[in-house]
Length: 193
Image: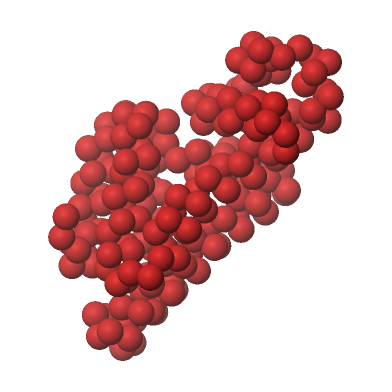
């Protein structure tokens, strides 16, 4: 991508995060990005093409922040979980808990209507699940969980709890909802902080 396309995608990512894909009209995209219709169609075939670029951008950002920056680091497993929870809370504090998870929002909005968008979003959640699953397996090997624990189901539960907490927080417009849920996850895993 060239820098102009990057600028457009970053700007529109913020629009989609606050308004959603469907509710963001082309006129708003043009106004926010400062480009004309001709320029828009020079860079993107359609709003859907732009939507795909935004999804790729958001996933890339989250992978960099959560996967590369925390989950793939050589750290004790509990530290990885702690840092992941801290990062998720910090990301939500940036918008006072009012916008929700950009990827989760798009997954809720678009998964039923667009197979390509659904596949891209589902792949992100599968990758996140796999990384958390690996961390929980480490904890199991360290004797921190019962030997019979199904760590894949536990990983799914953790991600669902986080995303559900973000959804409830967004709906109530109250960051304390997510704080409470993260506190309960920490207690469950014996993580202080």
